[in-house]
Image (cartoon, rainbow, N blue to C red):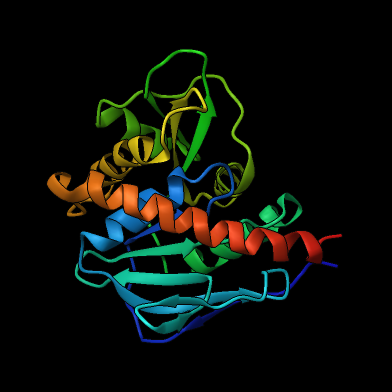
Length: 237
């Protein structure tokens, strides 16, 4: 039996032809740090929440206010939505979460879903590669002069989004960044944030403050995840 995941929209929104960013930390923290950095440097506002019994029971206090661990932010002017999560969900539920995002994107008539993942590399570099779910998505990657991932394995929620999009003809682009596993997450996140802005017209990153913000966000995200990990471990025993 699949766990139930609900998305509660707090405000009306028009995202037809727009974009959706996957900000779940399914493989590494770079994706959630990059997503939060983008949200903090653009005109995004809280538009909804995602909740489920499989999520650890926790409230994240921000500026004295309680927050759900997984939130939906929207920039109405750019028609960009982003799911931002500060919890690590057991890998057995990644398919369910990705399928929920795909169905919500279909309902909102989203044109492109953007996801991110770190991949381990022995080389000390931050090379970016891109994978697309459809011919149209792969054409977009090439037109932007970006590196196409010809061979590889993409795990977690990003991998499920790619597979699901290939079946339903939903455009999905996953950004992959090489990491040696020792560099700080904020460095990779800064590159990911810039890559997202290449894929989404109008989205931008304030590079003058991005690194400082990303370092702070990395600290906060890691603290939140450490707190929720204990609850998660007890739930999935």
